[in-house]
Image 1 (cartoon, rainbow, N blue to C red):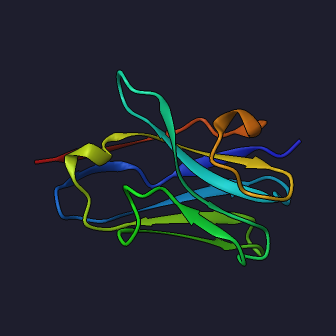
Image 2 (cartoon, rainbow, N blue to C red):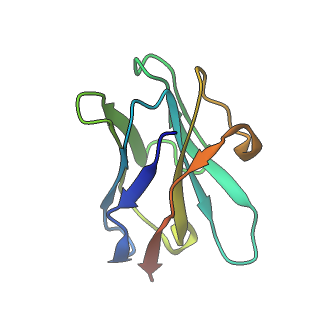
Length: 120
């Protein structure tokens, strides 16, 4: 089974940028980033299929976040720009077969998460 390890989280000021990475032990198919803020549900952030021909974003991050992948490295990235305090959460990557969906219950393999904190 594929294992996922996230990295790149940290503390950043509002307006700043971070790049998250998700390294897979195998060859994951569809990949997605979700985030979970205290007191809120875990929400879809962005997703990308194997060939990078299908990419989806949550409305709240469109134009600010960019998801990409390097299949030679089995790694998916999330470039986050213009961060604001509402982006503060634990960010998780996840994988499932074939197509990206926005429902976290569709994903069977998850990383351990990386904390992103945006100060005002």
